[in-house]
Image 1: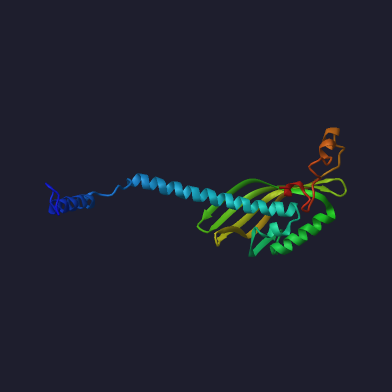
Image 2: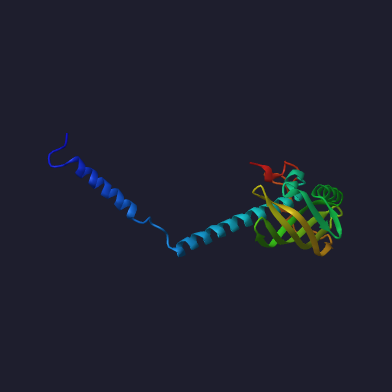
Length: 208
């Protein structure tokens, strides 16, 4: 039954007109400049995330060596990676074992510091140059210092950046003679309640 003053055909006609009006109204579209800006910001964000992942990867190498952590060290390399130092090539596994054997024989401990870092990313491949400085306390009480650059080619495989090839270029190296440290330095070298530096998981850096 139709309501007084309103026919079924009238209601249908009004509904049809409303739907046609919706179809005729263009959808809101961002201007080309706004879309370009969004794309640019997205690319920059992707670049910054890649750069951070790459720097985290390089840091795992240095920390893995300094803490004698083989698993951490190897996590920064692809399984087929190659390392070159002084004309000698080796796998990351062999390089780690040989380096740790040398450090245990000649040093009490050491630090591989990463300094200037530049990186060029081309798709899933990145080319990085990172300055380094190595400091170590020798068992004869002298101090070892060397500096140079890591030349790395990294590849993103399965969404993860790792080193595919590394060349280490040593620019300078030498030994600092022993010298009696001031009393204040000796104070800072004494182990405190936070624990003493260690190459195993007793090191304070592993405390959570």
